[in-house]
Image 1 (cartoon, one colour):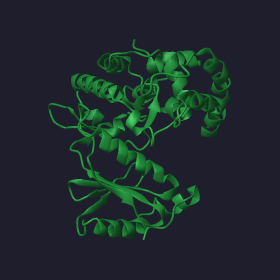
Image 2: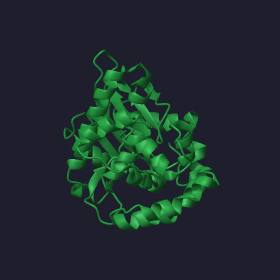
Image 3: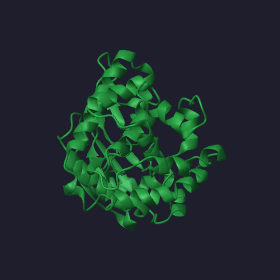
Image 4: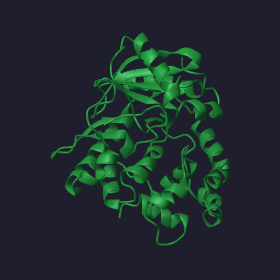
Length: 308
């Protein structure tokens, strides 16, 4: 009952439109033995995700990105019980009509840290930063080899080279202005990045929006979600999201995450990976994050990824 979504144009016609999605989701829930449970679509997220009752979450992947559903199910199954904070348990995963895939998982307790952040006392923010660093360290300590058949890239050096070759045009496409675009080639050429680093399991979007917390006096991390964009590669790649979306240019918080993680990556290395990141969007970062004292990429690196 869900229409085929095998192109970006079909995505725009189907995925955002709840009147189109809802009948198919209800049909899928009935097939999974969940008929009659309340369904509520979460308002944010790159994929359509629904709370089913109070204990389950159904995440759907149209054909255009069905492989992400395979990856998320495999990664979540692999991670169960292995991290300091919970990750969703997979109850079921498979195919639906018209090349759609689904993952039915447990619903974790807690609140989106991005939504809760303004209410978190400063001392509790420090503890959350420490717990985030410990969680990321535990993730990176796992052997990624069992997921090698579903997670890429197969050749990290080739991935970095391909991202480097398109870095300027990708940021131009996002609307970055010339005074920044002109600096990108020289900056990337000046930052040595390992062609074949030790591979770790990367979340790639380790950000407040994907961390859950208990909204009480004793604030704690209660979950890490959204592994559909997981990859394997250099650990520094995950610290891009830490600086941009967890500490958000706050050197004290960034230092706490790095200290708990047990290693610090250089600001220039992290800015280089931000430019190479699959989802990097510098105009958005420049709007939302602290402005550098000088309009240079070196200054930007210290502002967003420095430790003070």
